[in-house]
Image (cartoon, rainbow, N blue to C red):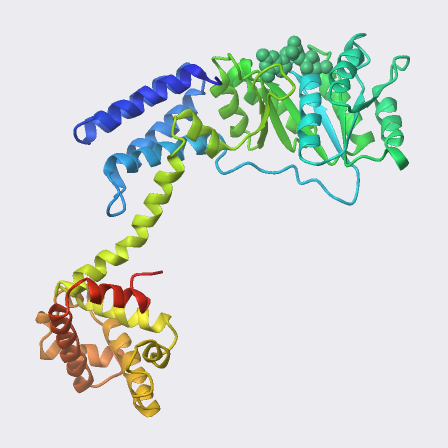
Length: 447
Ligand code: GDP
Ligand code: MG
């Protein structure tokens, strides 16, 4: 499998974490050290490694897991997020192909990086995704280059345009583009190029000439994954000469340095669009940092974990309800209830949802109540944190201040406090699952 060493290292680390009896600072530091070691062994740049592990450590120590999510799961989630970020973050990005024209894709990269193979693999991938494809071979340096491309493409029934006699790559490309018009028009035209120059400058110069003549819709840079973090300099150099729209990292099968190549490439800000993981024509896959890390960590179910985390965050609301139900309602909880009612639209709408009540409440009453609720909102906003948490401390002078702050009268404030107490007592009396379900149906506890 891809990046076997890194995978094994990270999985062993995870196992240690999951097996730990409790999570403390030492465990977190050890985790950071283990991750560090694994990444460095995969040739990830030292600075990137340190950045990652510092963040990992800090977040693991400081961030509170959402209520209900275990500390361990939370740390796994952080590790997952930080590793994804190292690889560019997010899901895969598409090729952004246009429907109304032939999309010209220029394949660039140094000799031996896997361009020709990647061109054929990408052609197959595009076919599989419903696009018609034409390929142009412009490597005029290696005599066998065109034959290699033709052989690969014959197997997938993709037509190749080339010219053995020409020594002018740009002319071949332009003629090829002409060739794939009319009846031979294709959705995508892939242009394979030469990467003959060991000496970089000559190659980059040639790329620029080709780029200016062809004006491709997309430049894909092919990088050999076995070069590890040197990929940074290479990607950077190419990008400075032609706008690289995406990167294909090859030979990730059996490369101990793949992690370095992927992270270094991502660090240039360019998107890794595909990775190649073998010599077969199907060994090309779209690259998604999050999915890749999920696989690396051996967590097919990392998605399930993340979903659970999200759900738990939402359930925090239900914890609130449970507190309200148990009679420990704070003013904040009270406010929360008012807010929830506000979110539902109007009181009128609320009453219409309560069986037996609909039709019994007069419109004028509803208006009065809505006004009152608005006033309460202002009052609560005028309270200090302490006052909200512990309404018993609200004495006469505090009542005066709250009334002034909210533009209401002292009588209003007193009334609200009485209402709050009554509401609290009522909740206490009505605790039980039935009431919970009822509240939920009314929209409490949902976002
Ligand atoms: P080019 O010079 O950039 O066109 O590179 P080629 O496409 O000719 O590939 C150079 C060599 O690398 C060939 O022997 C390919 O079979 C091999 N190769 C390309 N991609 C991969 C890959 O993902 N995995 C492995 N193991 N070999 C690859
Ligand atoms: Mg080639």
